[in-house]
Image (cartoon, helix red, strand yellow):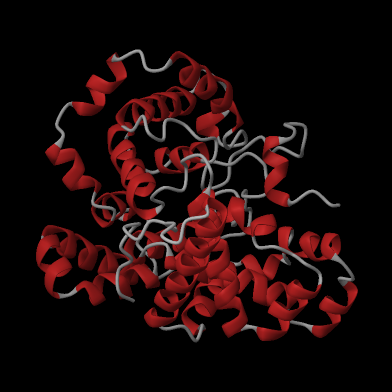
Length: 364
């Protein structure tokens, strides 16, 4: 089976590497881009920046009375100069930091669990090895990545450290100072991706079922193809969801998706996944060449480049015929199914399913 593009970054540093980084700091890897970004006019950029700065200065008012305006502006894309501060507010990290002054520094002073610390130490060099921040151990990126992951493992010992968290933390460190990145990371792990990283992966299994149900609604021919060849969602979506697309999408697409994700919650990841699956296998000709599980997985793990482009993903996300109720129905259905399975396994009629308190999803 062909190696997915995103896997190249963690396999070898011998791939083609440029002597100069691109505009996002990448020397190589699939997320490097030499293609110039379509520029907005200077007047458009300034106008958007002013709108965002005004909104941030009046954040509590907008969140309580005009959340739709925040959501709509996130969908258009947050200006690069404002994005770090916008993410800090969107995620609620500014409140966490305010409520917990000096906590980050205090966490860094603690020794932590020795085995967890060793796991983090071994893993930190694997994240974005082609990016200027993470090229070697002496770079500030690897040092701060170790600190953020260590601090979180002490802050939330129930989760500790999971390898899938590392690319998320590294991604945030590319945009925010270490302490701010830490609090956004806390919010992502404990709210947006609540219980994703605890042993057993029960929540990701539940979300795999939800994704399958939504696919049946949005793209029946693709759903039937996956059913026919027994292509279980966990075989292709686990990395997408656990790493919040940080190892999957081209860089500019990833930034736009995260603008929406931090505003709207986990439903954005479902929508991105549905676009990738649907567009990759929408053509009958493509499905016909996928004669089994392996061929189908190869297509899903290495989608055509145009499908992963920023405008394609964002525009098709917005066109999906999905209501808030569709997510709620599938969530309830999967909860009931898993509760029934657990009851059968335990031999108890009152067996529990997936936690009903998991992350509140903002209204779309």
